[in-house]
Picture (cartoon, helix red, strand yellow):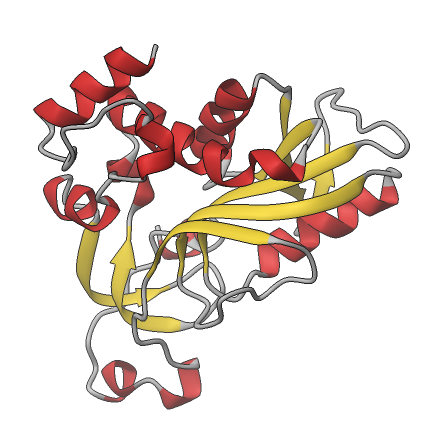
Length: 219
């Protein structure tokens, strides 16, 4: 399995060491390069799922659309969080679905997801979290962490224990914006503003809302 993943990264130009004895431990995965190659770094005027405005948007759907990329990212992130000893991965829909699944696959644990119903984050579709079950929450991007914290509350309401958080990208501006261990593959300091302070709004630049929380409103 490791030799296959190593070949993937070599083909993609993301493997930088001759010693391939431990692909995951080496962390040679160049996430920033992969973001650029997949066209996932967008520029313009965006409303993030957090409600903040930004001249930049990371469209992780583009980053993850190739299964080989999703698998490599999932294995790298799983390697970062395996010491959390999670018994289940929980991912907030929609953004966390793909990365949550591949991380769970790499850890060989079940994965379920939370989703919004009438604006409230909830656990549906027959998914269950056992009393005292150790959970790791996996997201694609963390900015304010609102969806992630809402998911943590859902887990707690079902009796689960959140032992850690993880995401591909950390846009929060903090090394750890949560109250439990947190790991990411890349920290990105991209500018954000509250709507009332947004210079692009004042300049009349058209805004786009690619995040799932606001996409219906902007469609």
